[in-house]
Length: 541
Image (cartoon, rainbow, N blue to C red; front, side, top):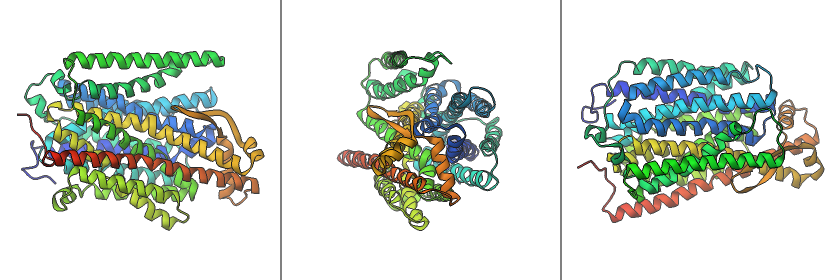
């Protein structure tokens, strides 16, 4: 796979495929979880926002793993991080499988699923903190190509997970715990492949740069952005912990607890920002790296956030089985194309930023097309366009940061990965869940006010500063889906089904605004580098 000039260490290929298997495990678990959201909705009665929160935990938890892992990777070594990730993957399975096995009903199940998913995400984040700098350092002369190969494992995991989940859940109709357990197979394999392997050091680590010097390009500007995201995440994560368990709180008391957790989150963010200021000697940081951080937050929201819902959304618009099939097709497109990054960059002459701009446009167009599909054939075309668009986002962004900021070592690309994951978990997945709740409720209320009152839940769906909405009852929607599938739906149920589908179409249109914003950013970056004489990698002098 690699040439002598590409690789910097003799075991580069072994490390590449070990990292491939590690991210494959994350992809398998992610895909299967996305395919069993409907199982959880029917079994526990969760709303779209609650399902979005659980799916989001599969991304936000990775923020801790990838950022903390990236900060300490050059100091403690990659091997110890791999072992900790392996342990988190095993524990996450134990916690997740406790859902529905004891007392506490839906509330207890929600907590088991949320925190089990969160632990799974921590493991994925730690592996991201290991694999990205590891491959960037193992193949320093062709990072875009090899990072794309490394991250071809993500769609490969999505394909395997979706196909296996489809067969075990929809055809054999086994418990959702059976397909979800399958991610433990590649987990064991990556543990064995990494075992005993020497790891290359980053350029910054080889030159003995201190942590403060590695953080200098991040500085106060980049630190402010990432610490704000961490503060929001910490406040949200600590909310159920600060609220007394099993105690019914008045509305004013609940509000007070939310405020307290928010303040604690901001306090954590402030402490972290102060730490960055001290170790960097109040370096302002790079404006370019700050822009890359913002762009990658959008990447996380549109790629990971959309991936956590796309099976469910396209399955509602068409059929659940077709939704899973379309997800497999999209993931297969990503898997194959990620082996072509070298051809696109070096043969077609597109710079990494040019690739990102084209992908943004295609992703935007693909989401809009998907929102308008009426048959499985038009859907295949639409999701293929979307799949091509999202293919190169994540690894190419990491390659740009690694190319332009070599003295950051593992720090910048790990922080970037953390930003993408926390954005996907806190903005993308819950945001799309909120959109589904809002638009479906609006469509049903517009069609029939009385029917809306029969199907609306007491649960309120909220997101950021947007107004809260009453979601449609999850269990009732599950009953409607079953009735439609079995051709036994009443006229009222058909009307509810149409409203739910139309809500999903509007959700995809709203989602398309994210890659549109990314396209604007990448046009600006292309103009910036044109003024510098063109894009090229940098090295520590």
